[in-house]
Picture 1 (cartoon, rainbow, N blue to C red):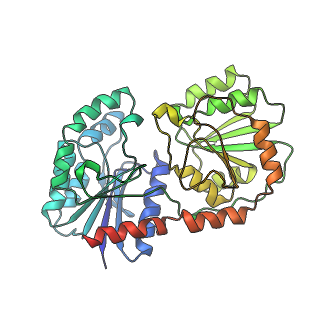
Picture 2 (cartoon, one colour):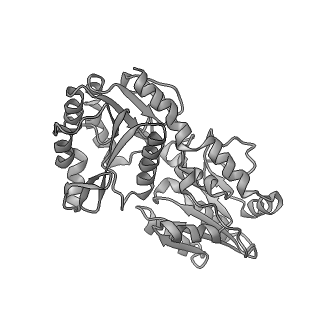
Picture 3 (cartoon, rainbow, N blue to C red):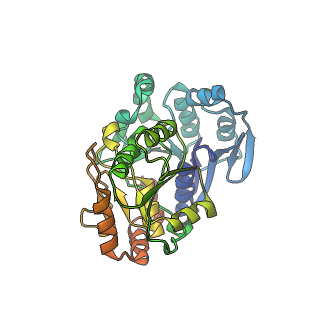
Length: 364
């Protein structure tokens, strides 16, 4: 059986969306016949699967340090002679000397190294401070070729990323782990739901503007936290829609299921142009589809064509959104949640997405 270590520094509690993604990828590879171990941060504990590797006290300073120095507990795990893998599949961290050295340790043990780059190219997604750090990272990119065998990435074009053999993919969803929404009983008020780690490019203030001029009874339920939260709360108040916008914070499990059961329509990012992105592969749209809920899409996504019945497309710019037209679309479409769920199972499930990646990993 092929043995893989999925090496990440993902914080289970502070990055729930990314944690959900890496656990779903792990589950898919296991379904495909691989033995897979996953590393992640849970509170102050670095873990492999459910076993603690060691404690790392968390603070802003420690989190900053971990961006530049690959965590010691993971380096110790990699150098332990009892821990041998055929492949280490590593989610990209900040690429510097410490990261390169960790890759060299893995490669030096005769292990294949696969590097996942969540978005490529990614420079335009960075804020000003991170663009400065990117200059430092850029100086180390040439060193990757000697210690990485394959790159997997989400992107628009087929490329050899960092001049390394690469395979492109789109995001997926573990459909079986997502509960189908229950039918919404109250249709007097149309409720929208947006789930995100809130950032500037989610652009929900576009929706606030539309709500302010809409004569229909509508609500927007925002699930998640992030750097844009305070700005969004301020914007909702300034536009006079604060009584119709509900900020729920991070929600998981039954609490999240209940919010989906309450709502009629999902909302994806509405301002990806702010990150200079015009093609998306959002995790949340895939979750919306798996739950059987129609949704608004604010950026091109090649898994959802223009004629996709359960998707309402809005321009990827700052133009005004017509909520009344969206409600008309919703009321006239008679959506079948089972049909939407079946689409997700057939086209978006991680098992199907990881299958060609697994084949590529073990073909070279």
